[in-house]
Length: 448
Ligand SMILES: NC(=O)c1ccc[n+]([C@@H]2O[C@H](COP(=O)([O-])OP(=O)(O)OC[C@H]3O[C@@H](n4cnc5c(N)ncnc54)[C@H](O)[C@@H]3O)[C@@H](O)[C@H]2O)c1
Image 1 (cartoon, protein in one colour):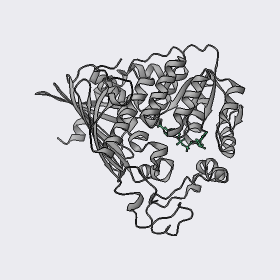
Image 2 (cartoon, protein in one colour):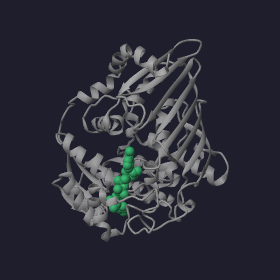
Image 3 (cartoon, helix red, strand yellow):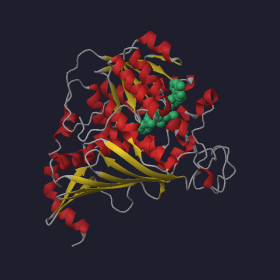
Image 4 (cartoon, helix red, strand yellow):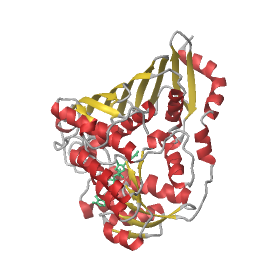
């Protein structure tokens, strides 16, 4: 029997049962929570993440719970465009200290580029705010320690927004592992493929420089490392890694400063007209005169100093070993993961926009040692697999339950980046790096 047919015939009955067995998801979607007084929120960094997930979406769905009291960006044109796009009515600022003193928010949302997160997280906490920071929490171990120290000193709360944890498909994997479906996990194989569209986009923007993004070991892979920490339910102990720049940057045969000024538009596979996207035009190209930032930088610029292929071995404090890899120039986008346990194996795979098989669900395959194979189907949903909406619910709706332990705090934020920092150091030094040598955090066999 062909495999697809087997799934479609045997999993029909299971599908309903499986979907309804994700109680936290259904509850999170429907809860109204306790309203209480509205929290006053301010945001620093009105770029694409700030205006979308933390901007228009919050104003649209959570105005009963929170209200924007300030928006800040160093680019005066972008912050005004952002306010209009979001439909916000609050005041805008180009100076952070002025905003904080004037509007005195309860919560600060940090959506500037990665290397600046520490500055605003720390100052926000010092000025009396709880802070919501985009991932990665920061880009090196020294900044990580200063954030840990500031949090202890001020007693304020830091939430790191790991939206990947909230996809129902990944929550189902977490639940199957926690239920002991495959016994004790001993090792994990995790391979992530970024394609020549999404993957290439990191090489166009500020992400292409280590000084801003910490490299994709931090900017991108910290998402994946957080998922691993959460699924494995332990903290990482040691990392050994390799990485190289094989495709983008200096490897290109032709280059320019950016696509709009390029002489090779007709022959370059990566030519991209940023102005065809009205949102990007409104945010970036219409405001270039203020900061000179080019959203359509050439992917073959010689200043690119991050890796475009990465591989790591990670050892966890509970003995689990992980083989991880990421490539940024794949023909399709997705990932494959396998959890190897003492009683069986869980396999899952995602291919975004699969041109051959289209379905409205994602699968998980469970193979029991000496036993049968089961398939679980989880309905697909919009916005990082439905994760963005659930993350918002958790953060903005009071007294919200957390049955899948998806909410991530400062320790989670730190351990996700510490794997990336260790991997980057290992690539540079050729040596394995112990996580405990990086900050004062000591990895625990079971997550707290
Ligand atoms: N969780 C996710 O899936 C996800 C997705 C995209 C981005 N992000 C994160 O969101 C953050 C922002 O990314 P983005 O794609 O919106 O970038 P972006 O370049 O669109 O926006 C960054 C903004 O910060 C502003 N800025 C730069 N320096 C500043 C300073 N000193 N003070 C104030 N503002 C300053 C820029 O002018 C820009 O408007 C990053 O940390 C990124 O990692 C997360």
